[in-house]
Amino acid sequence: MKSGVWFVALACLGVPHIAQARQDIRLETQMFVERTSTDINGRERRILQSADRAGSGDQVILVVNWRNQGSRPVRNLAVTNAVPRGAQLDLSDPAMQVSVDGGAHWGRLTDLWLPTALGGTRRAIPADITHVRWTVPQEISPGESGRLSYRATVR
Image 1 (tube, rainbow, N blue to C red):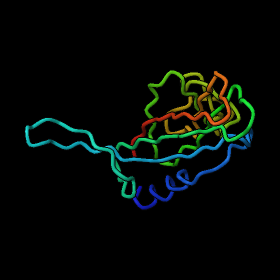
Image 2: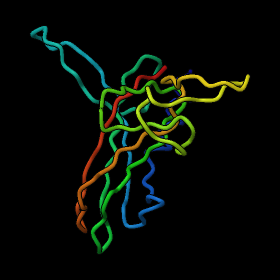
Image 3: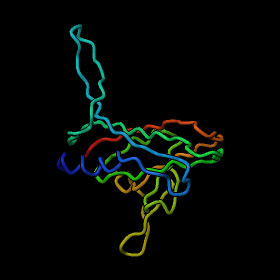
């Protein structure tokens, strides 16, 4: 996949939007490319840079910032993000749930199945993931904010 196409797909995530189910919750996604360099002492350093030129093989970090802009507390917030085509997610976060059908069903990837063209089913694979979700179980007071992040590799 060309880096320009990748950037356009991910740039759409960077536009602030209001959560559909919770009008008082504002979500904003930022994306960074993680670069590795060596300093003058020979030590490896990791640097986060703007993701304006993410290419094949690059590690990207997506940060989802949320804020309760309403006047009432919010309970059991589900923070959901679409996964851009060509992203290979790091699935090591045990709190992350994934969907392979546009958000209709959620779980760990190992528990999800998809229908096959011949009428059977197969286990879902990382390339099938369409959305990621985290549940914030604690009550979110008015004005309270938080952040979630996850990693992906550009394929």
